[in-house]
Image (tube, rainbow, N blue to C red; front, side):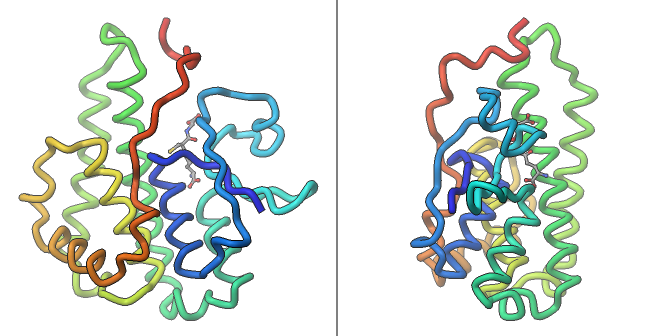
Length: 212
Ligand SMILES: N[C@@H](CCC(=O)N[C@@H](CS)C(=O)NCC(=O)O)C(=O)O
């Protein structure tokens, strides 16, 4: 199987953590693909043009990340172990994915869009969704996260690695101390997950979207 992803993608990182937790590294090859290249071959795999996408064989492709994660957990026989409280796991995934949508939009707005087209009000609304989500996790911490290899913990730790990569100057470590202390301890305990953390990677030079 081939996972199309990009080293900085928070959604791709979540899938990579699930691959590691389910010991599926030998069955799934990761191929770096930047979605804004908009290559026709990729639109055929995922009409939405978004990563991650999992090519299972010549006929079957799965998207998006929640579907891919559940597929990997189920096929490896780890679904119950990783999601003993399924609806808590799915709720936290929804929260994290919503924050990731907001954070990725903020990144696109400031990184790809020319300055004269950027909208501060719109950016602030995404920031509010992001910080409200972080505050929710900080305040409901004990009900939702722990130090076990559970799906909700994998979603959270990979997303925090994305924030560290793309928003290094934001006050998140200071404002959500419990959450970041948890993350540090979690990653120290489960160092095998390090390859799934978000990494910087050169963006292909020929991406021209929004540069108008
Ligand atoms: N709901 C999707 C979101 C995926 C997503 O937004 N991926 C971004 C990269 S991090 C992407 O492909 N963006 C390209 C685009 O928006 O056209 C999932 O969970 O897989």
